[in-house]
Length: 151
Image 1: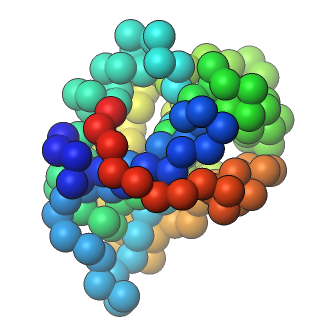
Image 2 (image 1 turned 90 degrees about the horizontal axis):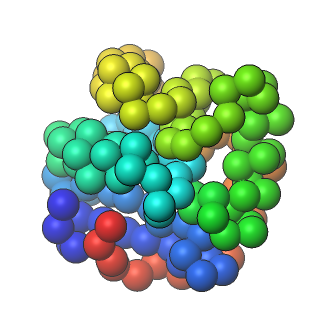
């Protein structure tokens, strides 16, 4: 994935990264799917999802697929993850990578690539999906400043 195909929001030392693909900007009348990926920089399963599984999707869908990455190894990221676990009932499925899109939570490097592509198609056909409702997420994004980076 190239630097120009990624937008990032840096909050509290790398809490959030927002990934968007270089397929061109979505038109105002096109639906957009927003997703949230909780990851740890030291997790090989997270690395697999971020560097191998997601890039083809973000290349295919361009700005119609927006994925916000949350680093669970920083205090604020861990707090957002705990809020997501409580909100989506993931107490028995805790672990990273965890990807949340609409009301669906996918956990692990097997479930995410197996189910996420079809979910993106389904949600785009249904008009898109906003960011998942995780307490504190909107405030964390609002505190960030956009700058290009590479994963």
